[in-house]
Amino acid sequence: MVISCDRPAFLAALLDALAAAKEAEVTQFSDALEQIDLTAEKRPRKPLLIHPAMDHLEALVDQAWDPRFAAAAKDLDWSQVYSGGGIDPTLSEGMLSAQFAGTYGRHPSMSVATGLFLLAPGVHYPLHTHDASEIYLCVSGRLQLCHGIDGAPFDIREGELSLTPSGRAHSLTTYSEPVLLAYVWVGDLMASTWWWEQDETEGWMRSSWKRIPGEPWKKTGTEPLSESQIREASV
Ligand SMILES: [Fe+2]
Image (cartoon, rainbow, N blue to C red; front, side):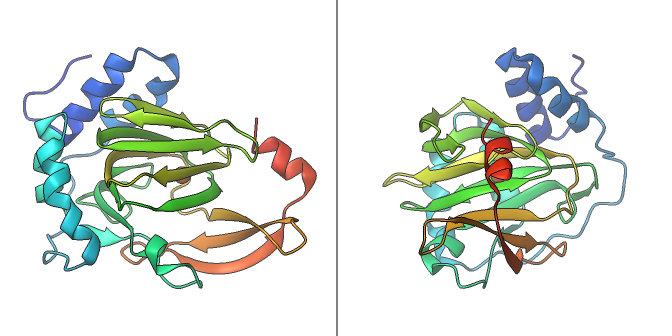
């Protein structure tokens, strides 16, 4: 792989990490990252976000395993990911993202979204699915992930990544420390993200969240999950 010397540091760091992973499945992500049109007009910078979760950023930046991600964390525009929908404020206010490229990030792209994701301590991002295939690369801290309703939890630490195929249910949980991740999404960036939860009879339901670029995701409806949907999302 040829890394252009004028490639932004964030993108170069991410491509280096994917190349080091030596997993065939990461190729679709690195190929998509290579296709980002860096010559397109960049979106303007936003004012610095004033938000409780931003208090974690300095320590996470100090611990970043690759300084190129630390620089991106200080440069990109942070925003809250979810709001409303009756979710616990610990959760909604505990997740921030800073998009390098994508539907609202610094570099416009409708085919790949990538950037940084900050999770506060004690956050459980419940089982959810989305059309996009997803990579999380741990930049600072330690994150627990779980795939499917019966999956075994596993951790990723600095320099380690996880890959979630399109449509697979997965959850994220932080411990007593915050976590900084780099993420890559490849697929339909405008499709709903579906959050899974059990009702009072322990039947599984899913709620649709839609995003208008530049605004937090908003809840748009809830429907039951069938056995086959649960099976297909747990493979
Ligand atoms: Fe996800």
